[in-house]
Picture 1 (cartoon, rainbow, N blue to C red):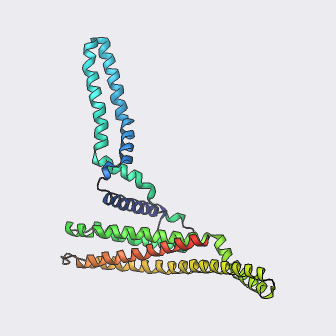
Picture 2 (cartoon, rainbow, N blue to C red; picture 1 turned 60 degrees about the vertical axis):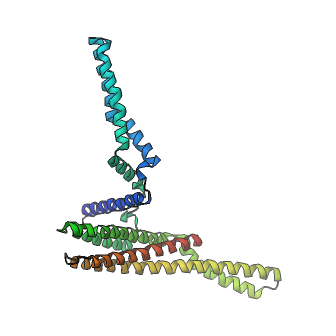
Picture 3 (tube, rainbow, N blue to C red; picture 1 turned 90 degrees about the vertical axis):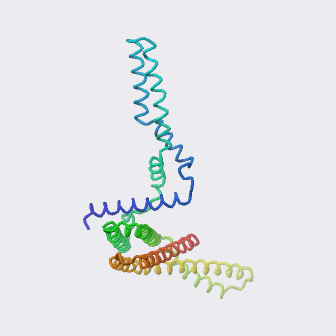
Length: 298
């Protein structure tokens, strides 16, 4: 895939992920348009907006000019008009729901974590690219649906697939992070040797106090090794899960092509959505498990 086309596709995916984040934000807050952070952001934006500056500047210039050439009474109406229009513009900017929606997007945009170029392992990056390809195919199929009722029915499907794409990226990024962690790699090689050496010392030791300390140290080392091996197992499991989920994405895409207007009850679409949700849950559960073990291993 040419780099410029790939970048455009990544940008589309990032915008779709942002849309999901915004929708979740709104669903979790019935009064989202009254969020103090949003109000503050809008107040600052429209107080220092170019139009606000133009209104204030225009009022001063026109009022001054009229005052010079027409006297004080001639300048008063222009000044009053400017005094009314400027706060009105700021008020409408702050209370407009479309402006609120844009402000929410800007506030939540930093939460979008999707940049395949940051994944250094080529195999993992290729898996994310393949998931991205299926995401594009599914989104295009839905957008080209000839019937509005079908597009509405697919809306949740496209949101779920976008959520799925994010979950694929998150898991791949975690595996990549583990593979780059030299400390964990070194510990996996060193700790088993440490345990063997300590056990040999324990067998030769005569002092009860030293033996007791060696036993505690060996127990600690074994717990560390167990955590490291659990992390290694989770990473291997994650790699297989990525392969499985990409195959599932291909299956979902094929099934989506078979969904037609005869699916009046939406049963097939509902089954697809349930399958997607199940796949997302598996990826997220594995990501959380990896995070927990990784924190213990550090």
